[in-house]
Length: 187
Image (cartoon, rainbow, N blue to C red; front, side, top):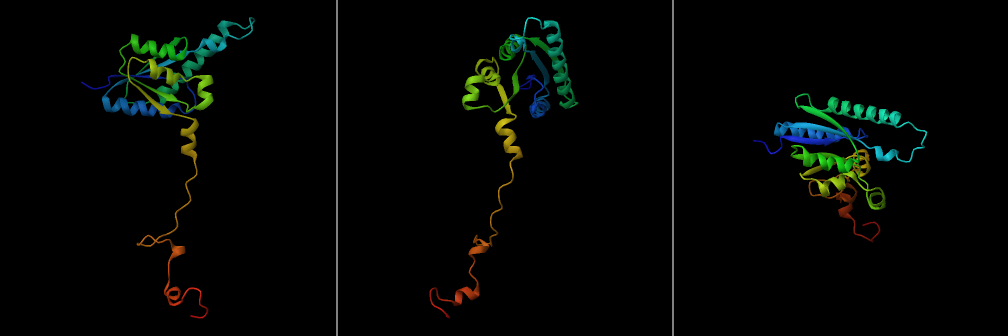
């Protein structure tokens, strides 16, 4: 029996999710597990729309975004890993936690956008809430924010060349230098 048989992979289709999918795919391969992809239609983000806005039109857009996100997940996931997809409606963190309690899930693999400081306090974090309330272990994979900066960061300047003794080239003493006495002209 494997440690993980079912991996829950919540997705919102955001940038960087490929990294999370690849991580979940490798974990699924190692454990011969199934990935259950979950897309949460977050209707709460549209509560401030004018009354004239058709809920049915908004719902169709959200469902279409969900289908696109789940299709992206299917494309990126390894071919030899079974993927099941589900769409639910609600608040993302609440629905992810509910899924871990109601369905046979062994681990959640999800992305974190690397928000910190005041951003995290004001906006909250879906991943953080899931980590605190999940009935199963949660693996978070950094995407965006600090993770993206680390990947695109320019390489550090090269260290000065050193000889086997570890002395930088600029500090090496040559034979000509050794023949001179410091502070004495013409020696």
